[in-house]
Image (cartoon, rainbow, N blue to C red; front, side, top):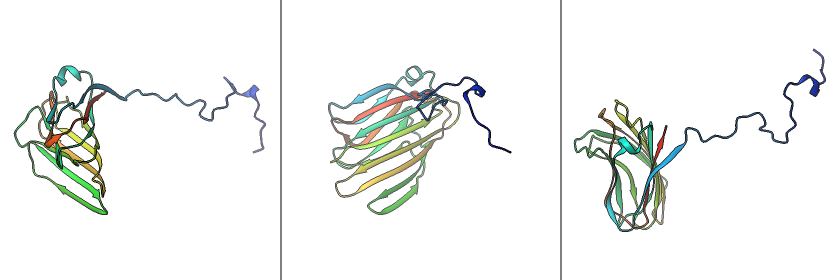
Length: 190
């Protein structure tokens, strides 16, 4: 096969462009997350609640919590659904800190450990709550990071709420009160 000259006469809908991404669909935030509610602590608190999710998050399929928190002392941040005090949450945990890896799977409890936060530094966390309103068990995944002043840490936690009820309330619990300036934001995704 010979080489054929490409000319504008043989191209339909020809337009000159200086962008190498020409013809690609524009960047779209469709399917992104919408901010539903934010709480920034003005005093220390051992629990933060997002309630009325059947109304607040109506029309969304997934929820996401983005938080940056610091505790009064080393503390675990925990998640509870619908104020369910029965042992229906199970979890897995992987962590890397100070050159050491650790991991475990937990027995069922009435909360899901998200992260162990420090008293001196704010620790970021992103928690995805998948299919929170469907009639099936709810899956949770959390990615967190932190710094204790001497070591850096990253943690991946996953969990399962063994209940087919729609989630109408989320509680974030701290074993040692979260401090002023800690921020908890709830997002919804269609």
